[in-house]
Amino acid sequence: MSLLEIKNLKKKYGEFEALKGLNFSVNAGEIVALLGKNGAGKTTLLNSIAGYIYPTSGDILYKGETLLKSENRLNEFGILIEPTFIPYLNAHDNLDILLKITGIYDDEENIDELLTEVGLKNKTREKTRAYSFGMKQRLGLAQALLNKPQFLILDEPFVGLDPIGKEIFKKIIIQKAREEKVGILFSSHDLEDVEEICDRIVLIDGGEKKFDGVMEYTKTYIAEYVSSNDENKTEKLETEDQDEFMEVLLTLKSSGVKIINLDIRKSSLYDLFKDG
Amino acid sequence: MKISIWQIIKIELMKFLRRRDIFAVFAIVAMTFIYAVGMRDESFKGTENQNALLWLVVQLLTSTVLFIGPVVCAFIGTQMLSSEIDNGSISLFTVRVRNRKKLYLAKSISLIIISVIFFLFTVLVLLGVYAWIVSSGSKFVSGTLTGNNVGALLGMGLMVFLFTYFLMPQFALFVGIKLKPLMAIVAAFGLTVVCNHVLTYTFIKYVNPMSYIYTLAYDVLETTDVVIMEPGFVLKTVMGQVLVSIIYFVLLTVWGLKSFDRKEF
Image 1 (cartoon, each protein chain N blue to C red):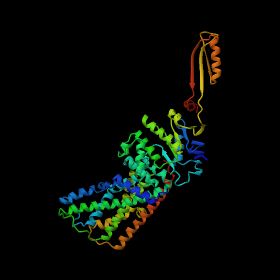
Image 2 (cartoon, each protein chain N blue to C red):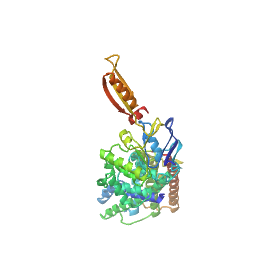
Image 3 (cartoon, each protein chain N blue to C red):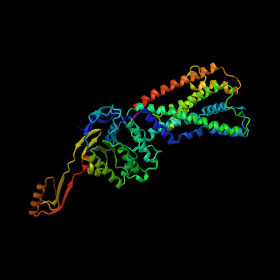
Image 4 (cartoon, helix red, strand yellow):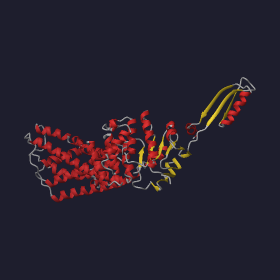
């Protein structure tokens, strides 16, 4: 059974359909990247799961039970969608109050540990209103991890982070998924980071799912050579079959054709993203 | 783990203290300080020999009719919800307390407790100012705690509390679901202006909580504490306003619960 299941989820704003019947699932210990262009419906979907907005129809199942009607449905979730805090409290007190809302009291050790883990050890007593965006992201992740979640929802987690912060985030995400079997659904426009950490990709466009699966990377072998019919013209060979490529290349060489350029082009996530 | 209404109330009270909203009292009593200075150097023109209760009620009423009290109390109300919606921190609660009605109700009850604390603190500061005037030997203060019309004055104090310190924050809490903090305060100010200017219309005077305050105020304050009020009349007036206030509170709470439950952030 999947940890999280999105079933025919629809969200309408008046006549505009932001989500048009989405279906997909996330398993325990799996890192799923939610990709899509601006306005594709990623944040609407994440907001629906987080309960910030109400879907028009469809269902969201967590461990086989609907999330939409359960009172304490999100207690096992860690959520980072636009980090928000109580601005007149410092980082430590923000986490402390969050624990109290969750019904846990006096877990100082956990708070200190988390703040150290996200790199805010020396900033715990500063009011969060003075935090930079990157620091807010770090504290947002600490908030998401505070209740030892079994499922993480992260909307653009790498935005505003410095390279060290990014590495910390990636390490935590991978460790949570691999060691603690936390299911993770995150959206990002940073395709290199997505390629690096995700197990599966769900691509949506215009509120519809366009791709759901593991990215298969292909290599295209390219050879550019002078045409045997006209010396002023060049011809191009493009193939994904390495054996065929080598065969053609040897034939060309043995017949004295001048090869101008050889190249191997690796497909990337960008191709998938671009083609929708 | 389920969180109870009482736990949310405790968190709200803690937040109120951390915000230091209590110091907004000094905005309410600012005018009082000006009067106090005038009374001390005897440049003030008005009722002499005011006892502490009369002085207190007059100051509370003055801050209400000058709109300072309602605006400050509306500000307190906006801090509970409108500001949190505005800065996004409400999501910390809505994610974990899935029952939005429970959350709104807890905020409403917290606001009542905060209103009482705020009112008592105002009273304390006003009595402190009274003592300061008494210490100067001013002819405007008697130095006694009470005089005539104790019941009527206590009733007026209660009515001012209900209008300014109880209904206004609740109104701001309710309109804050839809409006940004500043607009919610403007709405509360607008409501106070309307209430102050539709005091005598046939039907409206019965549903306007300010009408009841003025009914007693004209008789008690205009007669400068000399005329003895009839207890039956005082009781009828006060109970009328209490009833109207309860009806408004129930309506605001019911509408608030529905509206907050449907709210998308």
